[in-house]
Image (tube, rainbow, N blue to C red; front, side, top):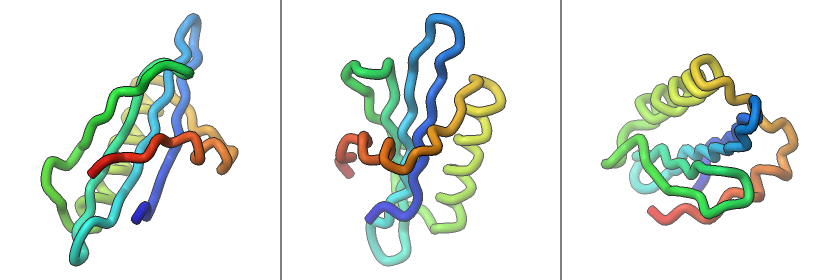
Length: 93
């Protein structure tokens, strides 16, 4: 079950990239942080920030730090429209 999700976009210069990040509840109070990224409109690459399920506290820290880094260092901004989160491809756990 998706607990938290964010959609990020970078369109500086000729860039048109997206990051979709999800905090997912998987089992007995354990969570994964998963993401998809790539050029908007192209096939996205899948990744995970947590190879094994971790506590909610740890997963939220990883999630929040990842978003902060993308915003501060890579100049991504959050897509504010909640409907854009529907674009997130089903993540495979």
